Image 1 (cartoon, helix red, strand yellow):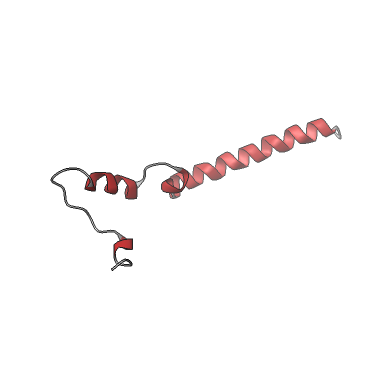
Image 2 (cartoon, one colour):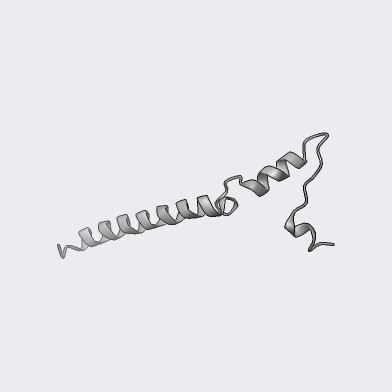
Amino acid sequence: MDDPKTLIIGGGIIVSFISILIYGVLAVLFPEWVGIAGRVARSAEQSHQENSEASTHVFDKISE
């Protein structure tokens, strides 16, 4: 149990598992942060289609 190889492998598995959990939580709550097209990206893509009106966004008020 006190073997250094076991501790390194076990630590790597634990760090990997925690990282995957954090990524999963971010993917659900903030998809744009992890590169998944969320609501903001979807509305931006729809605004680029012909014959469509661009919806307002929260940041539009800041730039005025």
